[in-house]
Length: 267
Image (tube, one colour):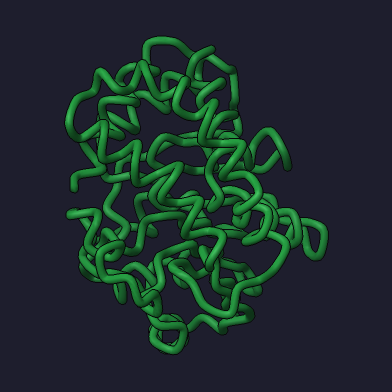
């Protein structure tokens, strides 16, 4: 199943309207369980230590970059390998007159990433990215290189601890099904980052939510993008059902699941 072409088509649809992009960001913040977990962690870090300069590593549509700017007033650099996506985000930031938000086309595994971004950061955020990158060790080294002392990285990525192999292989663009907790811990430590926290997401409740809110719509959109216009009606029915399963995953930490939320610090 291909996810990136769907994301590209959706982005092109909303790209022409900045108001529609803001609305889409708001909807993603509500319907994506991963966003619930990531944003809670960002709020926790900001309360504990604060942050000013943030790298959104693999920014994609730019929703987390926008959230970091609007919620915390952070100075955010969004990096993505897709030129078309970066261009749309740049136009959006300019239209919103967000001087503290910029976007750069770059490969996160490139040896010259630190020179391309040309600054250091208090925080690196990487959501739904690492499973798409072949040379993850190079990316983790780059995260350490651009972080200031005591700076943190927040990573949300699939877990290979999930027993359902069908879900692992659902997205064809993934280079890996996910990470075992000990595996990603070792890789981050090898890069010079001390892991503070690893928690599972997408446990029992999250897996049911994912099938209702993500798998079924993506399957339909792969058949035809005409389903994009029917999705609002589908979500009106499916989302209230999924909401209770999202709450279960959010408020009752699962002992295992299809996702990992990792926080590490550069010492």
